[in-house]
Image (cartoon, rainbow over all chains, first blue to last red; front, top):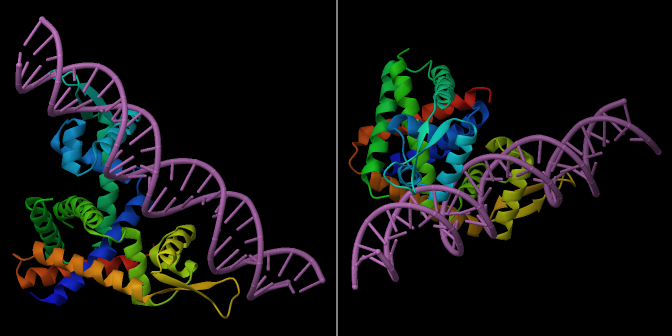
Length: 142
Length: 142
DNA sequence: ATAAATGATTGTATCATACAACTATTGATT
DNA sequence: AATCAATAGTTGTATGATACAATCATTTAT
């Protein structure tokens, strides 16, 4: 395996992640953690704290707090689980969906602007390779 | 511009960043912020708080604290600026360089493992597209 | 010489996260 | 049915990351 590619990737990934995180912070009304959680609920449907913690590789206390914050903002509803008196599902609300949608649009706009000089082939490759990386990580033992 | 690519990229970037951040947290003896700062000093040479803050798009108080923490660990030296009684340069130490090197190796190893089933072309493409993205962001007004 | 600007540090506050402790409910065992 | 063990979630506590504001000493401008 060509060590040079690895070094390039590592180096560029470091910069890339940094840039994304900074960009999200600056351009979002929705906090990073909120976006991630709302997105998860929107994509995968209602879920409890434990499940969400597993899906997002976070501690349940973290999810509990994040979900409570979102509930306060009425971005999610906390619905009792009819089969288990201890448990709840968090479900994204209409308002939550709206916030998520707007956050996404802002992200698309920014991406569109940044990638406007890329060829369609490059954009597609980028998406595909990112997807491939993410799939690889998903399949590994975390 | 094809909206679908944008959506794919946005989605995959979200997952990607999350995965990288989690992975770094789990596999590093060096904290994320420490790695970034050490890397910057290693690559660009000694610099003061203000310069580092600009380079890393962070507040000077943040850099001041991070640098002080690294100084405590003896990963960096704090050298008075001979031309300005207010200012200092932070310079990476031999120990700092060693820690950075080891952190990098760990990252290379992890990457090598994750990308072992990729073609060399894919790896190269990935690095190139990431680099291209980073360059685009660098050239934009942040 | 005085005032303004600047480099860095520190105070304070917010956000993100994890480990530990606790409570109420459920599941397993007797 | 009763008791014990496991579990879902919340809360306490602590650490790390970050930014805005305040402060101090030094440099620069007037």
